[in-house]
Length: 342
Image (tube, rainbow, N blue to C red):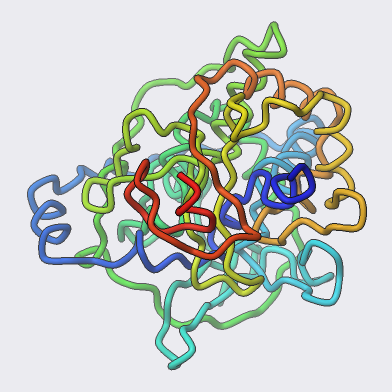
């Protein structure tokens, strides 16, 4: 059981690359809700983030680690363990299509190319997109593809650091198709940020882990959502069961990360860190839908902090088993691997 569950540990949506259709499908109900909520969009400002060596280093660490920016914003190398970014194309953008050829989503070219990338975007255009879900052209970003609801917690300093790093990337020309317009997007978390977001209290491992889990978007996959409102299902926080389908890496259901016997109660800190760095448990490789390649670039201190925080969440009895067939689960009332075991 241990290898089985660890193989699905933290099956984060590769943020964008999971391409989940269940959560992104728009219905008349979600369209009506979108019209009713009609998010406000704040005007752009002329703020610019000072380029410093410290910000460049911090931004590189975040973008290539907990932020996993290039898991979506560029092609993945399926011939290397963990499906890391294709060398030399990091941040160059990516368009994903269904098997029938229909455009599913577009992850923008974030390199400074002036014709096909972010070379003409202002710092505030990037900042507004990352934390507020509004593209450089004023369209709303689909929250099922861009997890800005979690990035909202990112401090101003970390945000500045990521943008400084993105500005340092080599410019890559990569024409991409036009993205979906915002009148088809239900975006309840596209809310303006008008007040400073200070650096959080990270004085203890648990507090540090809480911040990292938030900006690492762990709940994006590991907490089931109401498909209409996109609000978390009460009582199932971090309990997994999100069926990632379609999935270029093979269908997978996100693991229960709570300290329940059906979750990760038997993990220890050293083992958790080893699995994330190595991307495997013994001979069993982690599904690339869990972006361990990025998380494996994090420091042991940060990974230990994430583990410390996960030990504090409420235990939830909810078995998810990716070696079992997909079946209806009476607890979460969804279909996922091992659902019949509940």
